[in-house]
Length: 239
Image 1 (spheres, rainbow, N blue to C red):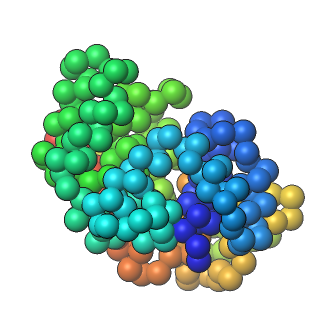
Image 2 (image 1 turned 120 degrees about the horizontal axis):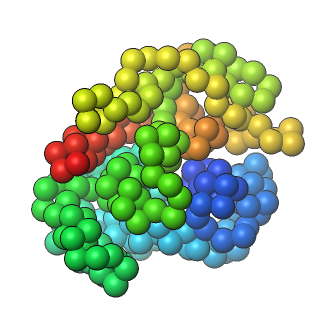
């Protein structure tokens, strides 16, 4: 699938909730349902100023001309080998350029300490370490749980939602971790349309702000879990 459509699937719900991007939610939804892209969608997605700089960094480090290449988009939202090729000095410089004028010295120093410690430009890093200090909405455990990309095995496929078995984010003794498996309802349909039509019980799906984004391969599930746990540990080490 084209990288712009994959990106739009993950960007749709936080945009619908007015957390990021421009005033283009219906267009995002229509593009995703149709699975068709054009320069207009690229223009819409470039307005996601939290995520787009990460895409540019990943693409540049891997000598990929298009920041919306499907491999780059997957690296940011799910995780793949492209993240491990990102130059940490460039990552440091990118964070400094983006946030130096907007953060107090202590907070800026905290963020800039992360690339030398091994942070990667993955969405989980942004949720656990960046958004918690610069986000425009109240930061809480519930916010982190909804904002991170979740995954789970589908147990039931309803018309308007899925029931998935997943591990929620929990806080125990002052440390973030993935909790015990439990069932969760995830929205899949609005006004009779959805992004996922080829899903059955036993499949794994990803979700963002309680919205089903795509069916995941086992490789993608393993990568998403790997980078999520990795950045949870990194966040816990400097809580």
